[in-house]
Image (cartoon, rainbow, N blue to C red; front, side, top):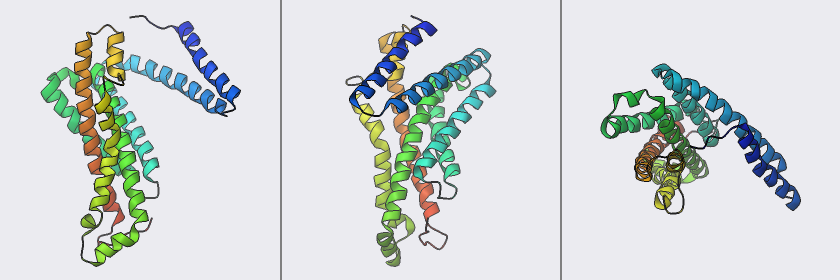
Amino acid sequence: MIELDFIDLGLALGMMVIAVGVSWWQGLGLEGQLAMATVRTVVQLLVVGSLLEVVFQWRHPAAVLAVVMVMLTIAAVVARNRIGKEIPGVLLMVWGSILTALSLTMAYVNLLVLRSPEALYSPQYMIPLTGIVLGNGMNAAAIAGERLATTIKNSKQEIETHLCLGATPEQAVKQYRRDAIKAGMIPTLNAMMVVGIVTLPGIITGQMLTGVNPLNAAAYQILIMFMLALTTLITGLLVTWGLCQQFFNRYAQLREF
């Protein structure tokens, strides 16, 4: 594999300099955002790379678990901010939903697919796989949760009409919840439809760059796409269910947020 040193990264930085120059030339006003994105990308990835290098060398289950928990918490916070901070308990609910979906998916993969006890605590497997799954779980929680919360807030009269006619809270928002879950699944389903034809995802390209057989890289990418589909669906189901519990009190009345 061709390793990149700081000189190579400095030369790669030239692409962002060109992007900033093009933005200034065309009057797009993106110079500040491009510069900030460049700085954050470099700093964040170098810091993460340094930390993960220590974790990979240490190979201790506690270190792997700590990294996963940090990533999970950040993903839950980002999704919560998209859904709405005013809804009580939404952070813990999102955190638990993503954790449950992640745990079920990783347990299935480790027990039935990889069938390797070492994979449960090996940073080589756990950190990349959980990182990809958490990213999709975060997106699913944010999209489905935001869609459901917004729809409920904008459909109070319809929901209360259903409640007055004898519907349960679950029945009153059933269609809204279905639509929210479907919305959360759209990015994953779109990616599965065009993977290998329009796009080559990071896992398969990264493995091929390191010299892995393309068929083996493709097999891992298939595994990952299936993991993402399951995690996304479970996360959407749990997040929307949790939100429905928050929007109604114990008397089946719609709450105001």
